[in-house]
Length: 401
Image 1 (cartoon, rainbow, N blue to C red):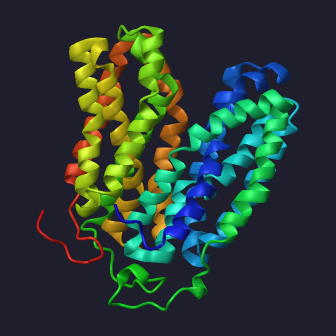
Image 2 (spheres, rainbow, N blue to C red):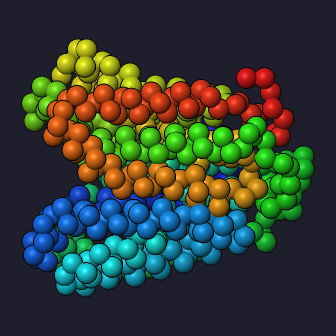
Image 3 (spheres, rainbow, N blue to C red):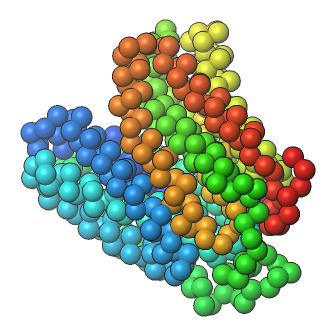
């Protein structure tokens, strides 16, 4: 397995992304209950505030992407380090419902301009068509955000309460996240564009978008991203309850749930090694089979197939996370990537915000039958991927499909 030539940038940005995800997306799982107790609100209220942050991040994405297209990722991501710190500090000082929601809205501004989509856009702005390995690399590193974030949030809360944990995370963004993002390459310091080496293009990619029927292609991609993010968020929120509804014991459900993270890492390692030699669209199609196939095994065989379900879902989800960065690049090219990525991911962010509530309702009403909903969405995403045209990476020509 060869390391990308831009391994230093990957390591820096991957570490910064690990901090960003651990201190925001994975924060409520550990701190929502103590927050709710002290603020005198229900735990669902804290998660509602978190959903507001996800909604805000969806609206911010296109404008953050446009800023990265114009100025590069370094200044935008440095600014989001400050926003993360400010939002977490505000969360640590919140005294009631209004200040809780306001703090999470501020964190949402940072999430919309500082998580994966922004990182992918920063890499494409730097390396153009040669960004696939770098995108995979940062998802490999940041894939351990929950592994780092959950124990550290628990430790910080035990030592200084949930407010102290928020302040500590805010401080880490200032002393670690900000210097890491500041270490990203400056656009002016890169080699000038060389048409013979498209991976080194900075902002001179002037080829027309290679996508055939670009509006339809964009609509299909947006649907794929929304469907797959709905599934992944729903599974993250409800998997233990879902497996218990399917007949598994609590111990089995918890143990099977623990397989998701490693399976995601294995999927990303496959993308980084073997699948890097195939077209990203083929890689995404193979990954999209994972969840529906796992559901079929679980519904047919029952709890005995729960580990297989977890592995198939996790591996597919891990590869699809990378596809969210690589597919827009290969289908449309690097020109205007950041803003386009923001618009493509807007429905996905909104679906992500609604997934825990909507899938929770389905689980209450249908029990394990809620799997038909997620499997149907997964199959629909696969059909949308099958309808997308295949384009050669780094080329504007359209080969036969």
